[in-house]
Length: 138
Image 1: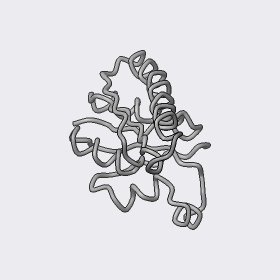
Image 2: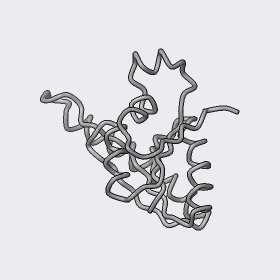
Image 3: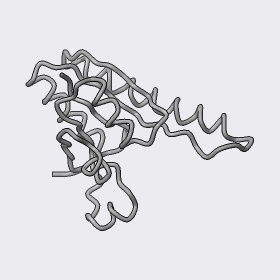
């Protein structure tokens, strides 16, 4: 089993990293850090540079998170997937037999999340395993 974390260096994700490290440590399980890097729209001259920039952003963000997790003594796996964040997290969770998916939230209202399609809101409807939404602030 494992603990899967959606990570993008936002304030909510930074807080969720701490919680995911606590859970993975408590269960003695590896931490799987996931960045959903859905490719931008089809075609156009800027497609390849945009695509590479998003993937590089994910590599940078996850690299920092891996260092934090490894300092806590955790085994880590990194996945940068060409999917939207919620779908990437559900897929990674299935492949890694996740116990839980951990994500940060922006402390949005439920209506705003439903209308704008927040990742935590989508996960609550897509995930067959528990989802832990960590608020940005106490």
